[in-house]
Length: 249
Image (cartoon, rainbow, N blue to C red; front, side, top):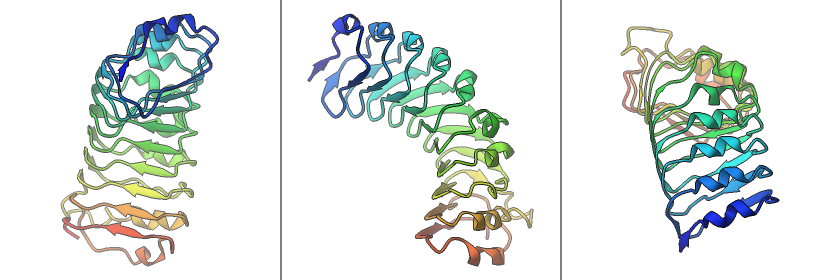
C-alpha cells in the first residue's frame, strides 16, 4: 500500500526498478524520467492510476517496461517513441485510450508489444512488418483497432504470438506463410471476411501449414465464408484449439 515516492529521483544509479505485485496506488511520478541509467522498470499488477508521464521518454537506456494490470488512463505519450533501445513494452489491462504514436512503430528492437485490454483505436501501419522486424509477440486484443491486417505482417518472421481478437478489423487475412514460429493466432470477434462473397478468403489457412508449432487458432465471430480448404488437414499436429464458430463457412 502507498504511492511511488517522488524521492526516487535521487536514486541516480538505479538500473532495475521492480515493484510488481503489490498494492501501489497513485500515479507514476514524472521524476522517474530523471533516472538516466534505468534499463528495466516494472510496476506490473498494482493499482496505479493516472497517465503515463511524458518524461519517460528521457530514459534513453530503457529496454523493458512492465506496467500491465493497473488502472492507468489517458494516451500513450509520443515521447515513448524516443526509447530506441526498448525491447519489451507491456501496457495491457489498463484503461489507456487514443491511438498508438507512429514513432513507437519505428522502435526496431521491440520483441514484445502488448497493449491488449485497453480502449486504444486506430489502424495498424501498413509497414509494421518492416519497421518492427524483431517482433515475437504482437498482442492488441480487446481494443478498438480498425482497418485491415497489413500485408507486411508476414515480414516479421520472428512472430510467435499474433493476437488480434476483440477489435474492429475488417477485410482479408494476408498470407502468414513466412511466420514459421507461430504458436498462437487469435482473430476472433472482428469483422474479417467478406460475408461469403470471396471464395478465397480462407486461403490464409493454407499459409499456416508452414507453422509447425501452432497450438491455438481462433477465428470465430467474424464474416468468413466459403468452404474450408483441404489444406486445413495439414495444419500443425500440435494444434490444440481451433475455433471457427459463428461465421458463414
